[in-house]
Image 1 (cartoon, one colour):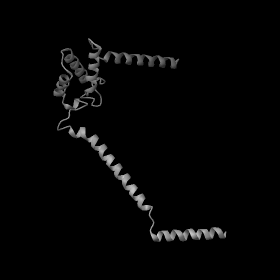
Image 2 (cartoon, one colour):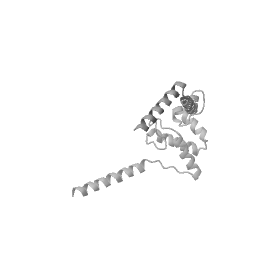
Image 3 (cartoon, one colour):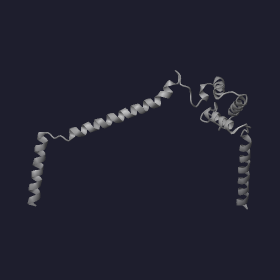
Image 4 (cartoon, one colour):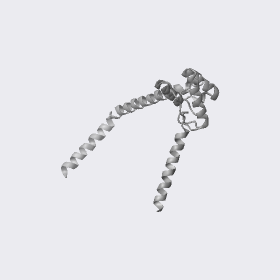
Length: 163
């Protein structure tokens, strides 16, 4: 009896959460598939000011819902992607962009990955060249080392042949 009640209760909870999730999603009407794709792209490229690690397409925060509504409204009024993005940046700040524009404030952000890769490659090249140089120098024996090696080999031959 208890497992049946528990299973029914779980089913009710799953169904109610699915219904709540379905009701919370915005439903927008688009004239064309291209317009819907454009909306999806725009909302995926804008960051939720409240959630910070989610875009406004995925966020359930009320501010994201407002931003999605604003994007939809501006698209319906014929605004370009740039106009929509600029309007939201003007309202919420540069932070809402996942891809900030290249300017004096963001140049380090854009240049640093290439700079880090270049530095990493230089370190690898330097390390490989340095280790190659050490190996070439280590192969050369001094006269004293050669004489010692010859003595060791002679001793080994004499000991090996005597036993």
